[in-house]
Amino acid sequence: MAFDLIVTNATLPDGRAGLDIGCRDGRIVAIERGLAAEAAETVEAGGQLVAPPFVDPHFHMDATLSLGRPRMNVSGTLLEGIGLWGELKPLQTREEIVERALRYCDLAVSQGILAIRSHVDVCDDSLKGVEALLEVRRKVAPYLDLQLVAFPQDGLYRDPTAEANLLRALDMGVDVVGGIPHFERTMEAGAASVERLCEIAAERGLRVDMHCDETDDPLSRHVESLAYHAQRLGLRDRVAGSHLTSMHSMDNYYVSKLVPLMAEAGLAAIPNPLINIMIQGRHDSYPKRRGQTRVPELRDAGLAVAFGSDCVMDPWYSLGNADMLEVAAMGLHVGQLSARADMAWCFEAVTSQPAGILGLDGYGLAPGKNADMVLLQARDPVEAIRLKATRLAVIRRGRVIARTPARRTALDLPGRPGVVDPADYAPSEQADGIAGS
Ligand code: FE2
Image (cartoon, protein in one colour):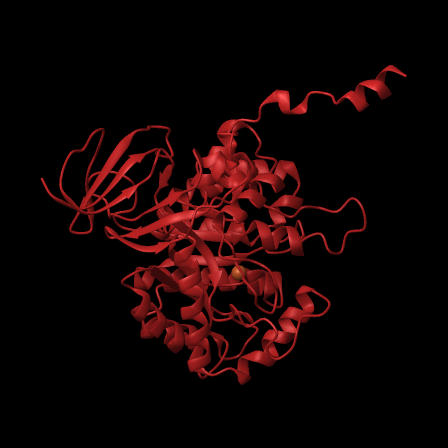
Protein backbone atom coordinates (compact mmCIF):
# COMPACT_ATOMS: atom_id res chain seq x y z
CA MET A 1 0.00 0.00 0.00
CA ALA A 2 1.49 3.36 -0.99
CA PHE A 3 0.93 6.55 0.93
CA ASP A 4 1.35 10.21 0.08
CA LEU A 5 2.86 10.78 3.52
CA ILE A 6 3.97 8.70 6.50
CA VAL A 7 4.72 10.15 9.92
CA THR A 8 6.93 7.60 11.69
CA ASN A 9 7.39 6.83 15.40
CA ALA A 10 4.79 9.25 16.70
CA THR A 11 3.56 9.64 20.27
CA LEU A 12 -0.11 10.63 20.39
CA PRO A 13 -1.74 12.92 22.99
CA ASP A 14 -3.43 9.91 24.64
CA GLY A 15 0.00 8.40 25.36
CA ARG A 16 0.10 5.71 22.66
CA ALA A 17 3.65 5.66 21.30
CA GLY A 18 5.77 4.19 18.50
CA LEU A 19 3.02 4.61 15.93
CA ASP A 20 3.25 5.34 12.22
CA ILE A 21 0.55 7.47 10.60
CA GLY A 22 -0.16 6.78 6.92
CA CYS A 23 -1.97 9.42 4.86
CA ARG A 24 -3.48 9.26 1.39
CA ASP A 25 -5.69 11.65 -0.60
CA GLY A 26 -5.77 14.13 2.27
CA ARG A 27 -6.95 11.65 4.88
CA ILE A 28 -5.42 9.44 7.54
CA VAL A 29 -5.77 5.83 6.37
CA ALA A 30 -3.77 3.92 8.98
CA ILE A 31 -2.28 4.41 12.44
CA GLU A 32 -0.24 1.42 13.58
CA ARG A 33 3.20 0.17 14.52
CA GLY A 34 5.69 -0.71 11.80
CA LEU A 35 3.65 0.57 8.89
CA ALA A 36 6.02 -0.63 6.15
CA ALA A 37 4.98 1.00 2.91
CA GLU A 38 6.10 3.31 0.17
CA ALA A 39 5.41 6.98 0.71
CA ALA A 40 6.09 10.07 -1.36
CA GLU A 41 7.13 11.92 1.80
CA THR A 42 8.21 10.78 5.26
CA VAL A 43 8.25 12.85 8.44
CA GLU A 44 10.26 11.24 11.24
CA ALA A 45 8.64 12.15 14.54
CA GLY A 46 11.40 10.45 16.55
CA GLY A 47 9.07 9.61 19.44
CA GLN A 48 7.84 13.19 19.79
CA LEU A 49 4.24 14.30 20.16
CA VAL A 50 2.01 14.34 17.09
CA ALA A 51 -1.28 16.11 17.85
CA PRO A 52 -4.31 17.20 15.88
CA PRO A 53 -3.90 20.86 14.91
CA PHE A 54 -4.59 23.77 17.25
CA VAL A 55 -7.97 25.47 16.91
CA ASP A 56 -8.49 29.07 18.02
CA PRO A 57 -12.20 29.45 18.86
CA HIS A 58 -12.17 33.21 19.52
CA PHE A 59 -10.25 35.85 17.59
CA HIS A 60 -10.59 39.31 16.03
CA MET A 61 -8.94 39.11 12.63
CA ASP A 62 -10.20 42.50 11.43
CA ALA A 63 -8.05 44.21 14.06
CA THR A 64 -5.02 41.96 14.35
CA LEU A 65 -1.49 43.24 13.66
CA SER A 66 -2.75 46.85 13.62
CA LEU A 67 -0.66 47.70 16.68
CA GLY A 68 0.57 51.31 16.45
CA ARG A 69 -1.99 52.31 13.83
CA PRO A 70 -2.91 55.15 14.04
CA ARG A 71 -1.09 55.35 17.39
CA MET A 72 -0.09 53.17 20.33
CA ASN A 73 -2.36 52.28 23.23
CA VAL A 74 -0.10 54.06 25.69
CA SER A 75 -2.09 53.39 28.86
CA GLY A 76 -2.68 49.72 27.97
CA THR A 77 -6.28 50.03 29.11
CA LEU A 78 -9.47 48.65 27.57
CA LEU A 79 -10.89 52.18 27.41
CA GLU A 80 -8.03 53.54 25.32
CA GLY A 81 -8.21 50.40 23.16
CA ILE A 82 -11.90 50.99 22.45
CA GLY A 83 -11.12 54.63 21.55
CA LEU A 84 -8.28 53.52 19.28
CA TRP A 85 -10.46 51.03 17.41
CA GLY A 86 -12.98 53.84 16.85
CA GLU A 87 -10.17 55.92 15.31
CA LEU A 88 -8.81 53.09 13.19
CA LYS A 89 -12.11 51.80 11.75
CA PRO A 90 -12.78 54.75 9.39
CA LEU A 91 -9.08 54.99 8.46
CA GLN A 92 -8.34 51.43 7.42
CA THR A 93 -9.08 50.15 3.95
CA ARG A 94 -10.43 46.79 2.88
CA GLU A 95 -7.05 46.03 1.26
CA GLU A 96 -5.23 46.84 4.49
CA ILE A 97 -7.46 44.48 6.48
CA VAL A 98 -6.92 41.70 3.93
CA GLU A 99 -3.14 42.17 3.95
CA ARG A 100 -2.89 42.11 7.75
CA ALA A 101 -5.24 39.12 8.06
CA LEU A 102 -3.29 37.09 5.50
CA ARG A 103 -0.04 37.82 7.34
CA TYR A 104 -1.68 36.69 10.57
CA CYS A 105 -2.95 33.48 8.93
CA ASP A 106 0.62 32.67 7.83
CA LEU A 107 1.81 33.17 11.41
CA ALA A 108 -1.05 31.08 12.79
CA VAL A 109 -0.38 28.18 10.42
CA SER A 110 3.33 28.23 11.28
CA GLN A 111 2.22 27.85 14.92
CA GLY A 112 0.07 24.82 14.10
CA ILE A 113 -3.32 26.57 14.10
CA LEU A 114 -5.43 25.19 11.23
CA ALA A 115 -8.86 26.54 12.23
CA ILE A 116 -9.90 29.95 13.60
CA ARG A 117 -13.28 31.40 14.57
CA SER A 118 -12.98 35.16 14.11
CA HIS A 119 -15.49 37.81 15.07
CA VAL A 120 -15.86 40.63 12.55
CA ASP A 121 -17.23 44.02 13.56
CA VAL A 122 -20.45 44.83 11.67
CA CYS A 123 -20.90 48.28 13.23
CA ASP A 124 -19.56 50.03 10.13
CA ASP A 125 -22.09 50.70 7.39
CA SER A 126 -19.52 50.03 4.66
CA LEU A 127 -19.01 46.46 6.01
CA LYS A 128 -15.48 46.60 4.60
CA GLY A 129 -14.26 44.37 7.43
CA VAL A 130 -16.84 41.75 6.46
CA GLU A 131 -15.93 41.99 2.76
CA ALA A 132 -12.23 41.75 3.62
CA LEU A 133 -12.54 38.68 5.85
CA LEU A 134 -14.86 36.90 3.41
CA GLU A 135 -12.12 37.37 0.81
CA VAL A 136 -9.52 36.10 3.29
CA ARG A 137 -11.73 33.07 4.09
CA ARG A 138 -11.74 32.16 0.38
CA LYS A 139 -8.00 32.69 -0.01
CA VAL A 140 -6.88 30.69 3.03
CA ALA A 141 -9.38 27.82 2.58
CA PRO A 142 -6.75 25.40 1.21
CA TYR A 143 -4.69 25.66 4.39
CA LEU A 144 -6.86 27.15 7.15
CA ASP A 145 -10.53 26.85 8.13
CA LEU A 146 -11.77 30.35 8.93
CA GLN A 147 -15.22 30.69 10.51
CA LEU A 148 -16.65 34.22 10.76
CA VAL A 149 -18.98 35.65 13.41
CA ALA A 150 -21.11 38.75 12.70
CA PHE A 151 -20.23 40.84 15.76
CA PRO A 152 -22.22 43.99 16.58
CA GLN A 153 -19.36 45.44 18.62
CA ASP A 154 -21.18 48.68 19.51
CA GLY A 155 -24.35 46.85 20.60
CA LEU A 156 -27.21 45.39 18.55
CA TYR A 157 -29.63 48.02 19.92
CA ARG A 158 -27.11 50.63 21.08
CA ASP A 159 -25.91 51.20 17.52
CA PRO A 160 -28.76 52.35 15.23
CA THR A 161 -27.68 50.35 12.16
CA ALA A 162 -26.15 47.30 13.86
CA GLU A 163 -29.09 44.95 13.33
CA ALA A 164 -29.47 45.80 9.65
CA ASN A 165 -25.71 45.44 9.14
CA LEU A 166 -25.63 42.12 10.98
CA LEU A 167 -28.39 40.74 8.74
CA ARG A 168 -26.54 42.03 5.65
CA ALA A 169 -23.34 40.34 6.85
CA LEU A 170 -25.18 37.03 7.28
CA ASP A 171 -26.68 37.42 3.79
CA MET A 172 -23.14 37.92 2.47
CA GLY A 173 -22.09 34.57 3.91
CA VAL A 174 -20.84 35.18 7.45
CA ASP A 175 -21.22 31.89 9.33
CA VAL A 176 -22.19 32.64 12.95
CA VAL A 177 -24.42 35.11 14.85
CA GLY A 178 -22.57 37.23 17.42
CA GLY A 179 -23.64 39.66 20.14
CA ILE A 180 -22.54 41.70 23.14
CA PRO A 181 -25.52 41.89 25.53
CA HIS A 182 -23.63 43.37 28.50
CA PHE A 183 -22.74 46.42 26.34
CA GLU A 184 -26.36 47.31 25.52
CA ARG A 185 -27.77 50.33 27.37
CA THR A 186 -29.84 48.39 29.91
CA MET A 187 -30.15 44.87 31.28
CA GLU A 188 -33.51 44.67 29.46
CA ALA A 189 -31.95 45.69 26.14
CA GLY A 190 -29.20 43.14 26.68
CA ALA A 191 -31.72 40.38 27.32
CA ALA A 192 -33.76 41.48 24.29
CA SER A 193 -30.64 41.36 22.11
CA VAL A 194 -29.94 37.78 23.19
CA GLU A 195 -33.53 36.80 22.34
CA ARG A 196 -33.45 38.48 18.92
CA LEU A 197 -30.02 37.13 17.97
CA CYS A 198 -30.90 33.55 18.97
CA GLU A 199 -34.10 33.82 16.89
CA ILE A 200 -32.10 35.04 13.89
CA ALA A 201 -29.80 32.03 14.30
CA ALA A 202 -32.73 29.62 14.62
CA GLU A 203 -34.44 31.04 11.50
CA ARG A 204 -31.27 30.70 9.46
CA GLY A 205 -29.95 27.44 10.94
CA LEU A 206 -26.77 29.11 12.19
CA ARG A 207 -24.56 28.86 15.24
CA VAL A 208 -24.37 31.56 17.94
CA ASP A 209 -21.25 32.89 19.67
CA MET A 210 -21.72 35.93 21.89
CA HIS A 211 -19.32 38.03 23.86
CA CYS A 212 -21.35 37.46 27.00
CA ASP A 213 -20.97 39.08 30.41
CA GLU A 214 -17.38 40.21 29.79
CA THR A 215 -17.47 42.21 33.00
CA ASP A 216 -16.72 41.86 36.72
CA ASP A 217 -20.34 42.72 37.56
CA PRO A 218 -21.79 39.59 39.25
CA LEU A 219 -25.27 40.77 38.29
CA SER A 220 -24.46 40.61 34.59
CA ARG A 221 -26.47 37.45 33.94
CA HIS A 222 -27.07 37.44 30.20
CA VAL A 223 -25.69 33.91 30.02
CA GLU A 224 -28.91 32.90 31.80
CA SER A 225 -30.91 34.34 28.87
CA LEU A 226 -28.53 32.71 26.40
CA ALA A 227 -29.14 29.30 28.00
CA TYR A 228 -32.89 29.93 28.11
CA HIS A 229 -33.22 30.85 24.44
CA ALA A 230 -30.83 28.11 23.32
CA GLN A 231 -33.03 25.60 25.13
CA ARG A 232 -36.31 27.21 23.97
CA LEU A 233 -35.27 27.31 20.32
CA GLY A 234 -33.59 23.90 20.23
CA LEU A 235 -30.13 25.32 19.51
CA ARG A 236 -28.39 22.64 21.55
CA ASP A 237 -24.62 22.33 20.82
CA ARG A 238 -24.77 25.36 18.52
CA VAL A 239 -24.48 28.18 21.09
CA ALA A 240 -21.31 29.44 22.77
CA GLY A 241 -20.84 32.09 25.41
CA SER A 242 -17.47 33.79 25.02
CA HIS A 243 -15.63 35.23 28.04
CA LEU A 244 -18.39 34.74 30.70
CA THR A 245 -16.11 36.58 33.14
CA SER A 246 -18.94 37.77 35.40
CA MET A 247 -19.35 34.13 36.46
CA HIS A 248 -16.04 34.49 38.31
CA SER A 249 -17.67 37.07 40.61
CA MET A 250 -21.15 35.58 40.91
CA ASP A 251 -22.66 34.33 44.12
CA ASN A 252 -22.01 30.60 44.50
CA TYR A 253 -25.63 29.80 45.26
CA TYR A 254 -26.79 31.44 42.02
CA VAL A 255 -24.07 29.60 40.08
CA SER A 256 -25.32 26.30 41.51
CA LYS A 257 -28.57 26.97 39.64
CA LEU A 258 -27.02 28.52 36.53
CA VAL A 259 -24.46 25.88 35.56
CA PRO A 260 -26.98 23.00 35.30
CA LEU A 261 -29.21 25.24 33.15
CA MET A 262 -26.24 25.94 30.85
CA ALA A 263 -25.53 22.20 30.64
CA GLU A 264 -29.20 21.40 29.97
CA ALA A 265 -29.21 23.89 27.07
CA GLY A 266 -26.04 22.39 25.57
CA LEU A 267 -24.10 25.64 25.80
CA ALA A 268 -20.35 25.86 25.21
CA ALA A 269 -17.98 28.23 27.04
CA ILE A 270 -15.03 30.05 25.51
CA PRO A 271 -12.84 31.85 28.05
CA ASN A 272 -9.91 33.87 26.70
CA PRO A 273 -7.27 33.55 29.41
CA LEU A 274 -4.67 36.08 28.21
CA ILE A 275 -7.21 38.85 27.76
CA ASN A 276 -9.38 37.97 30.76
CA ILE A 277 -6.49 38.07 33.23
CA MET A 278 -5.28 41.33 31.67
CA ILE A 279 -8.59 43.19 31.66
CA GLN A 280 -10.71 41.89 34.53
CA GLY A 281 -10.41 43.13 38.08
CA ARG A 282 -9.20 46.56 36.96
CA HIS A 283 -11.61 48.36 39.29
CA ASP A 284 -10.41 46.30 42.25
CA SER A 285 -7.73 47.47 44.64
CA TYR A 286 -6.46 44.41 46.51
CA PRO A 287 -7.27 41.58 46.42
CA LYS A 288 -7.77 41.69 42.64
CA ARG A 289 -10.14 39.22 41.03
CA ARG A 290 -8.80 36.99 38.25
CA GLY A 291 -11.90 37.22 36.10
CA GLN A 292 -11.56 33.88 34.32
CA THR A 293 -14.86 32.04 34.19
CA ARG A 294 -15.35 28.81 36.21
CA VAL A 295 -13.54 26.51 33.83
CA PRO A 296 -13.34 23.18 35.74
CA GLU A 297 -16.87 23.54 37.09
CA LEU A 298 -18.31 24.13 33.61
CA ARG A 299 -16.26 21.28 32.16
CA ASP A 300 -17.30 18.90 34.94
CA ALA A 301 -20.95 19.81 34.35
CA GLY A 302 -20.57 18.50 30.80
CA LEU A 303 -20.10 21.70 28.82
CA ALA A 304 -17.61 21.97 25.99
CA VAL A 305 -14.99 24.47 27.17
CA ALA A 306 -12.27 25.87 24.93
CA PHE A 307 -9.62 28.55 25.36
CA GLY A 308 -9.41 31.34 22.76
CA SER A 309 -6.66 33.85 22.08
CA ASP A 310 -8.97 36.82 21.34
CA CYS A 311 -6.32 39.39 20.35
CA VAL A 312 -2.79 39.61 18.91
CA MET A 313 -1.09 42.99 18.50
CA ASP A 314 -4.20 45.10 18.13
CA PRO A 315 -5.72 48.20 19.81
CA TRP A 316 -6.60 46.23 22.95
CA TYR A 317 -3.62 43.91 23.37
CA SER A 318 -0.04 44.66 22.30
CA LEU A 319 1.24 41.12 22.87
CA GLY A 320 0.47 37.62 21.57
CA ASN A 321 2.09 35.37 18.97
CA ALA A 322 -0.64 33.05 17.68
CA ASP A 323 0.59 30.54 20.26
CA MET A 324 -2.27 28.40 21.55
CA LEU A 325 0.16 26.73 23.98
CA GLU A 326 0.73 30.13 25.59
CA VAL A 327 -3.05 30.53 25.79
CA ALA A 328 -3.38 27.06 27.35
CA ALA A 329 -0.59 27.80 29.83
CA MET A 330 -2.31 30.99 30.98
CA GLY A 331 -5.68 29.22 31.29
CA LEU A 332 -3.98 26.49 33.32
CA HIS A 333 -2.35 28.95 35.71
CA VAL A 334 -5.29 31.30 36.18
CA GLY A 335 -7.67 28.36 36.66
CA GLN A 336 -5.19 26.60 38.97
CA LEU A 337 -5.59 23.51 36.81
CA SER A 338 -2.44 21.87 38.12
CA ALA A 339 -3.69 18.29 38.66
CA ARG A 340 -2.05 15.99 36.09
CA ALA A 341 -5.36 15.24 34.37
CA ASP A 342 -6.31 18.93 34.38
CA MET A 343 -3.03 19.97 32.76
CA ALA A 344 -3.54 17.40 30.02
CA TRP A 345 -7.11 18.66 29.59
CA CYS A 346 -5.78 22.18 28.97
CA PHE A 347 -4.17 20.79 25.80
CA GLU A 348 -7.59 19.49 24.73
CA ALA A 349 -8.99 22.98 25.42
CA VAL A 350 -6.95 24.32 22.47
CA THR A 351 -7.43 21.28 20.18
CA SER A 352 -10.37 18.84 20.34
CA GLN A 353 -12.65 21.01 22.52
CA PRO A 354 -12.71 24.03 20.18
CA ALA A 355 -12.90 21.71 17.14
CA GLY A 356 -16.16 20.37 18.54
CA ILE A 357 -17.52 23.84 19.28
CA LEU A 358 -16.76 25.01 15.73
CA GLY A 359 -18.31 21.81 14.34
CA LEU A 360 -15.23 20.97 12.27
CA ASP A 361 -15.72 17.96 10.01
CA GLY A 362 -13.05 15.26 9.90
CA TYR A 363 -11.05 16.59 12.86
CA GLY A 364 -8.90 14.23 14.94
CA LEU A 365 -6.16 11.63 14.75
CA ALA A 366 -7.87 8.47 13.52
CA PRO A 367 -8.26 6.56 10.27
CA GLY A 368 -10.79 8.33 8.04
CA LYS A 369 -10.12 11.77 9.54
CA ASN A 370 -8.43 14.64 7.72
CA ALA A 371 -4.65 14.26 7.52
CA ASP A 372 -4.14 17.45 9.57
CA MET A 373 -1.63 17.36 12.42
CA VAL A 374 1.26 19.08 14.10
CA LEU A 375 4.57 17.55 15.20
CA LEU A 376 5.71 19.16 18.44
CA GLN A 377 9.13 19.14 20.07
CA ALA A 378 7.75 17.59 23.25
CA ARG A 379 7.03 14.15 24.61
CA ASP A 380 3.47 14.74 25.83
CA PRO A 381 0.80 17.47 26.04
CA VAL A 382 1.91 18.73 29.46
CA GLU A 383 5.49 19.14 28.26
CA ALA A 384 4.18 20.87 25.14
CA ILE A 385 2.42 23.43 27.34
CA ARG A 386 5.43 23.81 29.64
CA LEU A 387 7.84 24.45 26.78
CA LYS A 388 5.45 26.25 24.39
CA ALA A 389 6.93 23.53 22.21
CA THR A 390 8.38 24.22 18.79
CA ARG A 391 6.11 23.21 15.91
CA LEU A 392 8.58 21.03 14.02
CA ALA A 393 6.13 20.29 11.21
CA VAL A 394 2.58 21.35 10.39
CA ILE A 395 0.64 19.00 8.11
CA ARG A 396 -2.56 19.87 6.24
CA ARG A 397 -4.42 17.26 4.18
CA GLY A 398 -1.33 15.07 4.09
CA ARG A 399 1.16 17.76 3.00
CA VAL A 400 3.79 19.47 5.14
CA ILE A 401 2.96 23.19 4.90
CA ALA A 402 5.26 24.61 7.59
CA ARG A 403 8.46 23.59 9.35
CA THR A 404 10.39 25.14 12.24
CA PRO A 405 13.90 24.00 13.24
CA ALA A 406 14.21 22.18 16.56
CA ARG A 407 15.19 24.33 19.51
CA ARG A 408 18.31 23.39 21.44
CA THR A 409 18.20 23.65 25.20
CA ALA A 410 20.73 23.16 27.99
CA LEU A 411 19.53 19.57 28.24
CA ASP A 412 20.67 18.96 24.66
CA LEU A 413 24.31 19.77 25.44
CA PRO A 414 26.86 16.96 24.86
CA GLY A 415 26.98 14.51 27.75
CA ARG A 416 23.52 15.47 28.98
CA PRO A 417 21.07 13.37 26.99
CA GLY A 418 17.96 14.85 28.50
CA VAL A 419 18.83 14.05 32.12
CA VAL A 420 20.57 16.28 34.63
CA ASP A 421 23.29 14.31 36.44
CA PRO A 422 23.17 14.99 40.21
CA ALA A 423 26.99 14.69 40.22
CA ASP A 424 27.07 18.04 38.44
CA TYR A 425 25.73 19.57 41.62
CA ALA A 426 28.26 18.06 44.05
CA PRO A 427 29.45 20.71 46.53
CA SER A 428 32.73 22.36 45.56
CA GLU A 429 35.75 22.38 47.89
CA GLN A 430 35.15 26.04 48.61
CA ALA A 431 31.52 25.40 49.49
CA ASP A 432 32.63 22.56 51.80
CA GLY A 433 34.96 24.95 53.54
CA ILE A 434 32.26 27.50 54.14
CA ALA A 435 29.87 24.82 55.38
CA GLY A 436 32.46 23.57 57.84
CA SER A 437 33.50 26.91 59.30
FE1 FE2 B 1 -13.39 39.04 21.70
